[in-house]
Length: 425
Length: 192
Image (cartoon, rainbow over all chains, first blue to last red; front, side, top):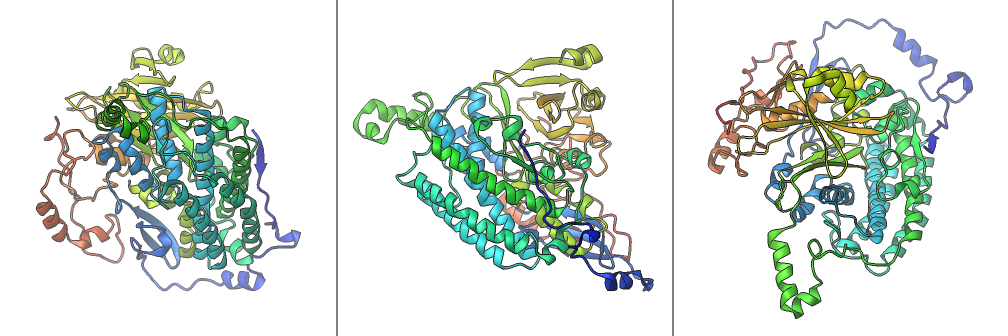
């Protein structure tokens, strides 16, 4: 595997010169015997409505002074019952539910879902469709990482990167809108293809984004990567070892920050990812700063993939040419009776899936995004299960935050990159 | 899979390969920790990442399947292990001692399907409120709109004691008001 270890630009070793952590005066203050106030543990409730929890997450913290003794996350405030709803909808109708789950990277969810169903039904999509979906997924990886970057920077007091990141996000919103007509609820995919082919000039607009976005990324690097406050807030905070991270089920950038090279685009390639030239960044320490560096590098790598995908974007049909799956064109529907009936039957009856189960996972922006679909021979699923990366990543927060300061808890929570829509489903 | 059958004999009930080429093993629920522990630690398998724990209710009185989705990082292989639980004995041993991941995932299965994981350190509802009394939403016999009428759901929401929700059960310093006992979700009575 092409491995790229993200290196600290600033040494952690005080002997080496650059160390931004408190100087000796601080150490002396820390060494003073702590007065015994005879205090009890304090119970602090953060959330569910709190900007630093990045959603409707509630953290119940037991504090001793300012040190976190115990964190109990409470979730479920955004529980929508997507999986139950899915059992009452045909396979194609579920696509609209998927982008509501992770509204920070809706296209990855659209794609992951239909890819799982296509695998269950044994459908091979067209070459053009594959490349288009790769473009959409990499674009939304940047989209999701940018939101994480902006909000995390705000949590440690840096406001400017937030504005820079959201300016770039706005451009991706515009791309979403010109592709699908919606900015967040994209619902761009259909089983066997896409809702529509790319509009004219869209690929060029993505290319334009890829050409200019690295400049902004570089500016954010300059603002944060060697920023003393940012280093002090993130280095050696929320450390987890590689072994523990695997045992706790970490995936995605959180796992790679601990040094484990686990990336489904390399380990279980789909859509010809093995033919794209890109590297998988891994960290060394497994702390918040490594998670930051890994995500920053992933954005650059996504730009690389986007360039290659745009280069090879083939012509040809985007939907599979199978009348059992693909709707007839609207022109045909309006002009001959058979196509109209065909259209009607496909919409009302749905597409049947075999009575089998299938698990398919893609490398989402937050970790391994799995879809487990079970069919019964009919047009509706028996079970549609989302393997939520944020849900599993968040379950580790109690372990990561114990012994840290309350302010570090905010940083740790931010560094995990969670989205509550997906955690609560 | 052959190794599994050779090692555990009749604990492995049957195996199959789906048409998408995925390996599935049906394991006797009474011996799930034994089999999963071996799959995790044996050097030829090393399924060190527990990707997912979920359940499937097929309805019509068929057993509920608990599904473990495993991945081996060193060998880059996936395996799906299933345990079939009859509706009158929805109980299986917890695998939290093997994988920490299972903590929340098993709580979710307990919450939404009513499967009890014996030996789980903290088996509470996770997505639904602690005092949710309508049963387990992802069961096939659970109606999409819920068991209670909309009026009853509103009445219950309005009469909730917010204190109950805001006090952790094991918070024993400072003397907060006594926490009401956790409401046990009704089990057994609703099996199809």
